[in-house]
Every structure is written in C-alpha cells, then in structure tokens.
Amino acid sequence: MHLVLLRFGAHRDRAPQHMAGHKAWLQRGFDDGVFVLAGSLGGAQGGAVLAHRESIDDLRERLAQDPFVAEAVVQAEIVAIEPSRVDERLSFLQH
Image (cartoon, rainbow, N blue to C red; front, side):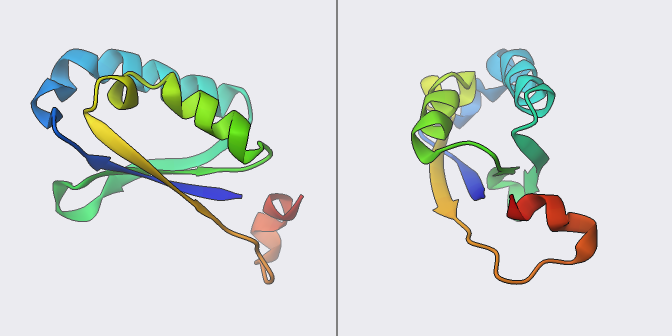
C-alpha cells in the first residue's frame, strides 16, 4: 500500500486549468480499484491519495499521467506502508 502526498509545487496557480483532468485521473484510479481514498491536505497544502494493489513502478507511471504532476502543479511523494495491524473493516488493504 502507498500513501501519495501531492504537495503544491511551482505552478500551483495553474491548478484551475488542470482540475478537470486531475479529477478524471483520480476517477480512473478509483475505477481501476487502485485508489481507496483521496482528499485535501490541511492548510491548503495539496492532496493525498491512498493506493493499493499496484507496484511502486506502476504507481509512478500512473502519477506521471496526472495533469497536476505533469504540469508541476503538485510534486508527488510516495510513502510505502506495510500494514502490520488493520481494523477488520479495512482488511482488504492487506492483500
């Protein structure tokens, strides 16, 4: 599982013109069963996505397709998480 932090970058001001593409990219991630959570970071710092069932290399390729990443609206940081304890409601994340 991976936590992706999408922190605003050099071209934050371009966010409005790429928002539709970013939202479509997010929807593809959910439709593909890779994204299980997406939301904003507090303090208007950017956003975050929780991804699973995808290798780090495939996730990097997916991130490169996000218009926000491609246009330097955000910088993506990937944090790998290896769950050792999970609430049963989220047990699907261990696979």
